Image (cartoon, rainbow, N blue to C red; front, side, top):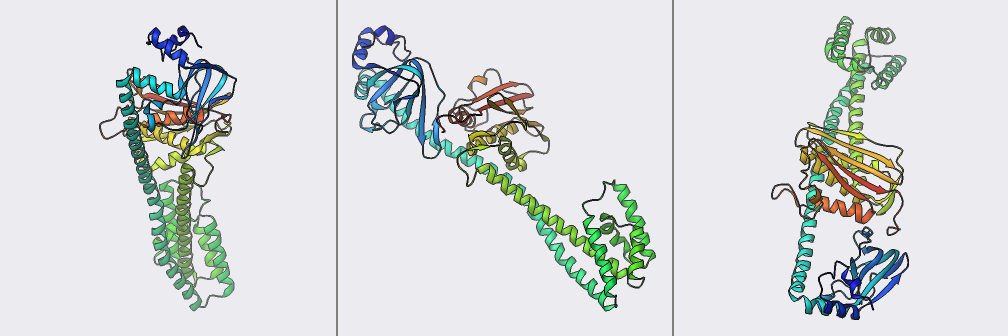
Length: 473
């Protein structure tokens, strides 16, 4: 039987009387455990309440929706687990809801569940009722607010993604509409050339010129607006000089493809003066068609990139625990937010590309990045700089997200990770964003989430182990 003085040193029992401690000591027993030995195992019958006397333990839970959840290891004497809800009587779970694992050689005080229930109900009747109400009410409130938090985040992300998809989709629709008209006109121009009796070899020469011009569309050197205007004026005059009545309308498309007065003379020589006006009309139309096709390609590629970012963000069709490049996760989150970032806020990334792949629950880490970036944007308002940087520190990956907002007051810095604590106005925040982030980083990944802040310089630092945790394996 354990000595009552040793029980009294545990914070859980420090206020009990000698009589109560004696009763407690006689009701339980002390047992030692080797490293990596389970004290209680999730799913086994809930038969005892376990209290750490010395050593180190870790609580691990297997969940349906989130997989394995491992809490940080603790060596504080007096921490407890096992049949913690035995005082609920018939409403208490029949099996352990978690596993307690000794992560170092440990001594535990084990109290039978029925004895624990009797002690709580007999010695602390009012506390028992309060705990009962807090447990049931708190669980319900937490579930409701968790759902609301996820729906709010989903709404924000959906609005941003919809906005981002709308721009390239509208550009593609506009380009396709113009293409219909251009293709129709181009056909008529080609028919006119055939009707005018252009020889087949000259038509081939014209088509080769069109291919050369369209291949040059993306290879033109950068020119100032004034240089482009001068080139269009020069080509417009040259077109009119060879009998092209609306040369000023054709000049912009031709100049964009690098067509010059010298090229005009080559076309005139090869196809003949009588076919030159119709040939240049067809050539300009063909170049514009290629430009429109390029716009459609760019728009659809942008849509594909956004969809790829959304899949990367949601980790659709992927295993929950995997080795990933954290930069891909960060980029996909920023892409989802792109439509919600005000014009006055610039985004700066400083990535350490030597950072190896990290073992993680990628979808949950994306929720962390979402919460931290969302808070940073809220803090800055319409002006500022959002900085995302990564680093490599021995066996840890470091991700830092900084903003130039007013900062976190020293008086509340220690409370920002508490559930339901928020500095936002009523109705604007649930106070769960940082709490959820902390639980994902520390509980799910065995990492750290810290904040350092001053006026105009706030940083949230996430440290993630580069080795796969035992619980996840």
